[in-house]
Amino acid sequence: MIDFRYHLVSIVAVFLALAIGIVIGASALKPETLKVLDRASKQEKQQISGLQAEKKNMQAQITSDQAFAQAAAPQLLANLLTGQKVVIVTAPGADGPTVTGISTALHQAGAKVTGQVQLQQAFFDTSASTQNTLDTLATKLAPSGVTPGSENAQLGADALIGGQEEAGQVIASALVSTDPPALSASEAKSILGGFAQAGYLQLNPAGGASTLSPADLAVVVIPATAPTAGDSDPENLALLSLSEQLRQASHGTVLAGTLPGSGTGSAIDDLINGSTGLRLSSVDNANTETGQILV
Image 1 (tube, rainbow, N blue to C red):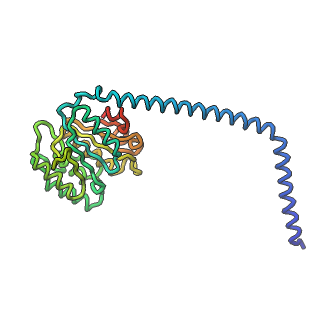
Image 2: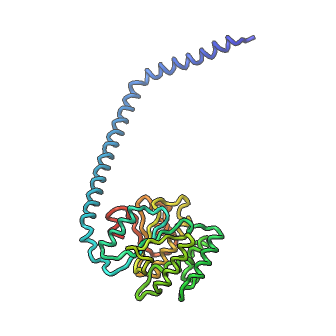
Image 3: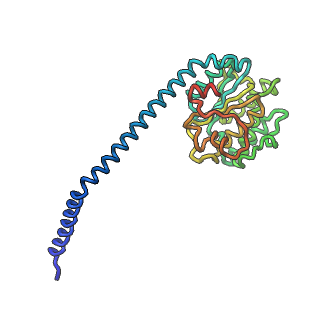
């Protein structure tokens, strides 16, 4: 009968043999292995050093370009938008410094910024109750000549955002216009106030004004982080729909975003690489001085 001591001795013998084999094998292969690893290490170090030098040079170039753009902005932008009124519309999560930089560039170009409209997260909700509320508000607040749900309002983006499309059409009519203004100040105030009171947007008129005056142009700033759902995210579709409505009702609209927020899955990515069929202008580096000049 084989006892426990036999098993123990057998196990110890196996591990001892393995250890001896590893030591002998390592000793025999050590010089050549070390040479290979040493060469590979040196190559990796050279590659890393090269990449670090390249990164340093690129960072220096970017810093220099941004310094030039900042210094030259007054000359580059002077009088480009003299006499124009611009409204800035921001999505939830839009980068604050980017919005400020865009506003500064607009002022340098001679434009009057009428104020900022901050879309609230509730505006992008796709539940049946929100869709019904947006539809009801749009129908109730729509001015003469604007028919929510008309062919002009339906961009074919997605059935999920039918309420946002209809609301966007009415909101756009109150924010922007072509000459002469289509709505009176009281009509615009009533429309924007209605959506603000319902919690779908927040108004920040410029210069302490009680309401936003109609603008000629619009800038829509997307979130600083792309949604996880990607191009099909309802927030992307709703932003693009509203931007298109603003474009149709004004002399021009620009969709702007930061470099990190304009990548894969963002509204700008969907605009450029998706199948929306829209022809909006966009700037994907509006967090830089150069991008703000482009806006």
